[in-house]
Amino acid sequence: MCFIAAARRPLIRSFLFFQALLAFYFIYFIPWYSCTVISHLNLLKYFSSLLEEDLECSV
Image (cartoon, rainbow, N blue to C red; front, side, top):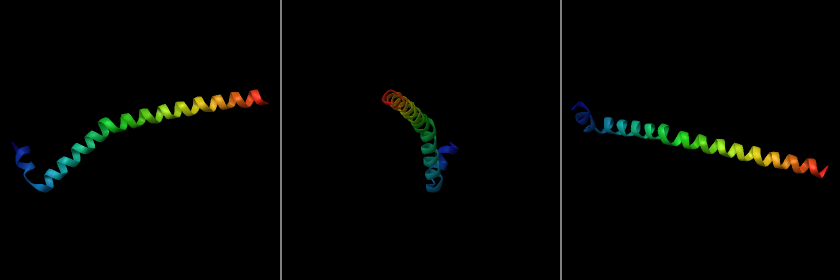
């Protein structure tokens, strides 16, 4: 009941909206971003290892 009464005030409503956005950011975006960064790093390691093998073969 207190939550509904607090949602009528514009400042508190915007604060609750901001908290919901932060929760969405921490729950969804950070794990997705860390997974993509890790996969990109793994791809970079893979390609750099391929380049090192190519350099060893060319010498």
